[in-house]
Length: 247
Image 1 (cartoon, helix red, strand yellow):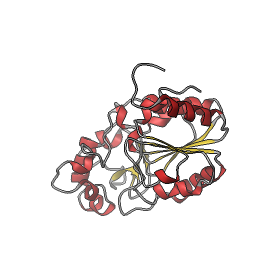
Image 2 (tube, rainbow, N blue to C red; image 1 turned 90 degrees about the vertical axis):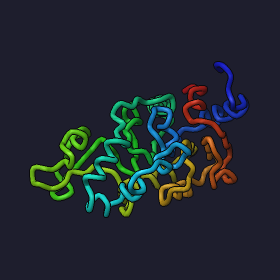
Image 3 (cartoon, rainbow, N blue to C red; image 1 turned 180 degrees about the horizontal axis):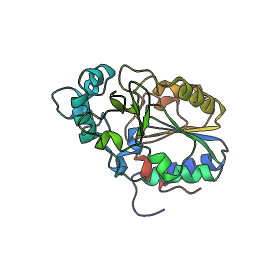
Image 4 (tube, one colour; image 1 turned 30 degrees about the vertical axis):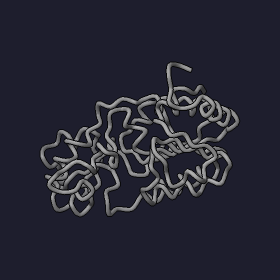
């Protein structure tokens, strides 16, 4: 163990033993996994929901607002959702190592920044889509991750349609195939680690109910509605906790 830590060593050691005894781990993560990479979350004191704009952020990143005001949507998008310079942190790196070791079966994430893939994770299920892909809202043509940042005030396709990021906006449903794959992974898991999420965003948060094993671990700075159902709860940053584990 290195330095001074806020979490008791016994909790870290218990988590390590649970990981050592598992062979099909699933990780379910939220915004707290990426805040240590400099990406703001939405609901914390300094998150996007507590900053002031002419419109509430949750309205700006809704489907109807995007269709009615793509210029305002893209101003917000470029100001607040450009994470191209962000780098994976200790949490992303540890999870990629666990996968390479054959212990982690899948990462299920609510994040859209692509940092799990940047760290080397391969089986990543993105519930809310990704900023790494863009497509035309009219014809469906694909564009690379930079296009929506460099394609003019309102990036357009060669067909004239507005290009949009491949993310799930408010008023849109989650991708059914991603949901079904996530449920399959959770049902097959012998350990579920939930990290960096307050578990209040549905339907995503409700997915953890599909896990029925006896190794449910919750790692989050604050309490969650599922704490009483967990086998282990650690209130600290996910990066701090994972930096103290080994594969």
